[in-house]
Image (cartoon, rainbow, N blue to C red):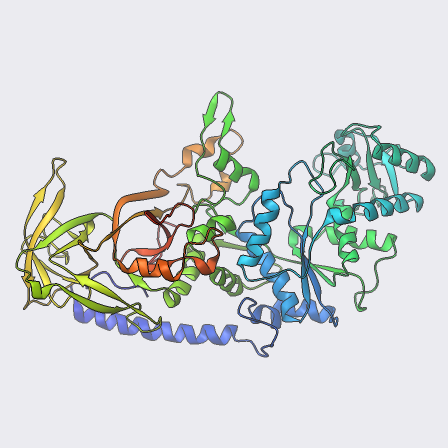
Length: 623
């Protein structure tokens, strides 16, 4: 647990409760270790590839279903936005599965829609994969295979498994049973046209004869088979027209393959053995296998060649927004009718967002992210978790891995009037009082110190144990307590200076953090709360802008005048602020009695340190 704030009114009762809690915690921890302990650890799994996810459960079953000698997987993101927390699971599953079984994993960009793709997304995706500790076997693009895909599209026409269609989207929807897909289905009038005619028209479509939406190449699947209840087999589009230059192929193409045509074929081109995806693609498995079979690329699962698709439950986080379209509204703002809604966050990497760039900037360690995925495990069921559970997992990791520092968010100066020159000393304090984290730092004790405004009350009470007039409190690691004797107020009515004396013979009931005035380092500290007041922001009115009324005005609380002990500079020297924001270069620490913090990589400079709260010391019950 994080360092306790203060003792309760009944010391004996609390000690008894503490011992009982420790006993129960050890028992629970023992059970947890037994539950997750892998039966047969493998040499291939390193610290960035949790063992138990792959040696037990669903993923073990997937491998046993197709135990190939050379496992080959792929992580195939669309480069049309920044990855979010759900993608962390996909990265861990695909790269970790390959690593566990001594295989390789490709990073393949699914870049078949140039209207939405930007270079910044390509760069960010690769950066995130490496941040999480994985290196792709190869970085490939679906566009690498555009020529080959086009040739296979022509081959599908020649085999009478694809045809040119000129229906608009509304007509295609009616053919597929209407808006709810429950009405009668019927064939497109172009479905029976001669293959040579479709081939000629497909080439004309390639050469610019038609505008977007005027023509499609559709696969001839099972639209007219009324027994076929899977919409993925109702004559899906294979090619459509997009009049936009491509980031890699330039202006060569004005027709682009769809995901349903591209994905399985690129898997086959790269000899992918296990195509692991989330359960929303479960129905796509049928069309995936069908297309491979039509082009003689599908072999029985038991054999070495040919990809096998299997689906696992995706990771969802309740209480936040993961939709790219909705996050874009938060980042860029939007206009609804006469109402202009300004941006709610600074950028896609704002620490309040659950994009992976945002979580990294907030200070979440990559290893903690992977451990969190490991704790959840991999099954076919979706993981819809609360933010509090995610933060509890991160907190557990930080407790064992980061040093302690003393931070004061709202400083009030305390002058110790009877302090002598002999009292001005330097004390050596360990980074972790429990000894789990190596290292120590020097802390100066002077005649003047800062304490937090929350640790002083003008009016005392029986259940209050911190500083108040004529009351003593302990200062962490200082050999004497202090007693307040008077205080001064500013024009705004707030106390700004306290005079105190040493309380040498008193045993205080509470200890608080403090920072020496002479050596204090000024910082800006940012504390984070939920971005929305609602516990279910996805259910808000996003169409008409009603979500803006639910934004939490206290989602970010900034303390411009905070101070921290000088030891933070030693941490900054040992881990320089790296512009890439790499997890290993971030400076993290536990601010005693406050929260876990990280030095912000974008806004911090040599002259100005900006801190982001990673997580609180204890669970926030409001979440």
